[in-house]
Amino acid sequence: MSFNGFTQHDFDTFKIEGLENRMAAIRERIQPKFKAIGEDMTHYLTELLETEMHLHVAQHARRTVNAPNDTWSAYCHNKRGYKKHPHFQIGLFDDRLFIWLAFIYELPYKEDIAELFLDHIDDLQESIPADYVISMDHMKKDATSMEDIDLQSTLQRFKDVKKAELLIGRQFDTKDPILQDGEQLVNEIKGIYQTLAPIYTLSFQLL
Image (cartoon, rainbow, N blue to C red):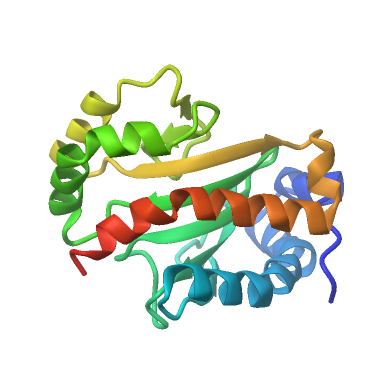
C-alpha cells in the first residue's frame, strides 16, 4: 500500500476497549502504514548510516490482559531484535506521533553509552535543535524540550538509574496537518533522523 499519512481514525485505535479488539485494530489500521513507510525508510537509513538497517514492528506479544496505550515500529542494524540496541522509532499514542532515536533500558551497555554521551555533551547540545524533545521512559508521553532540559543531569540519570532511558526526537500533535500528508511526513521523519544520525553513530562505537 502507499502511505498517505496518519488520520484521527488511527489515533482513535487507542480508545477501543479490550486487548483483542485494540490489537486487531492496530494490526488493521496502523501496522500496514508502518510497513508502507518501512521499505523507503529502511533504504534511507541504510544509506545514511552506512550499515544495513531492518524494520521491526511491535507485536505486543507479552501482553495478556491490558491493551497497549501506544504502538511503534523500530529500525535497527540487528535483524533479530532492536530492544538491546540503539534504534530509531516511529510510533503513536492516542494524541501524538513520536519520532525517536531510542536507547532503552534493555541496552546491556547503557552505562557506557551514557558515559560516552557525557564526554561529548557539548557536541550533543550543539547538534540537537531547541524544538526537539527528550524522554526518559518510552512507556510515557512525558517529554522535555531541549530548550528546557538540563542535559547533564538527564544523562547522569540515564547512567545511574537502571530503568532510565534516553529518547531524543520530536512529537507531533494529532491535529498537525503534516500527519495527513504522507510524502511530507516521510520527508520530515528523514530530516529528523538525519539530524540524529551523528548521535546514533557515536553510540555505535560501542557495539
